[in-house]
Length: 266
Image (cartoon, rainbow, N blue to C red; front, side):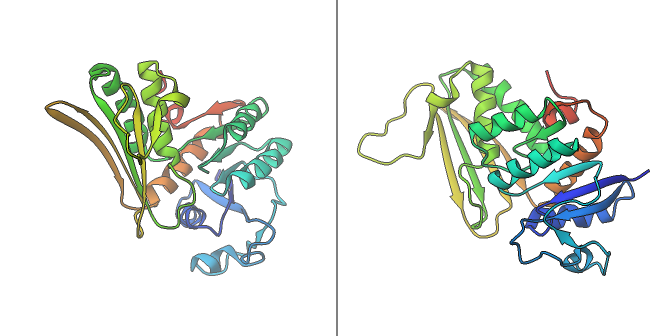
């Protein structure tokens, strides 16, 4: 039986790709397409928005029929609001929204007491493998290697650094027992900005229509090792979100991430 899927942020760039791919997947049936109440797409048929023909499914501000699972790619504030509704209705939720504050992340974690919640900075298989690799490399090379993280995204991305770049730093800090809050240097400017031992440099670029590129460079005197992931299409994130949605519908309440889905959790 097909999984009844609800898509929050269904008129956005990611929401449209998730909806298009879900329509092509016999394992899913989209039963609700959700957008904020003041969105201009309110009332528009989802199929017509996607260029797939009429689906008799109008975009609305809430779900009328309870779905099996929700996928959310919106804004931090909207995510927290929809999460409260999902928790009330006991609907599992996959969250791909980035830029969540520590307080909002705590709210996501708390929701895991009642529903299955999967929150990930990035839904890509390759990126999640990179999360694991950067920690291993940092631990192996030690503090003699300077670490710089550079991320590049399209000109419309609102938050910086990206959630993926921050998660790369968290993975490095966890593997090397560094304090995340005190070891990150965001860009550099001024007369005296020499590198401090153990610090992780963080740099964000916004240009054109770049989907997403992340590089972690490990440098010492004499050599540099770089690990890079380049996203060629948003479809990798959409497919990852659908994979996560199919997985989480069978899970008990709790907070999960893509490493759980991929069986890579330590």
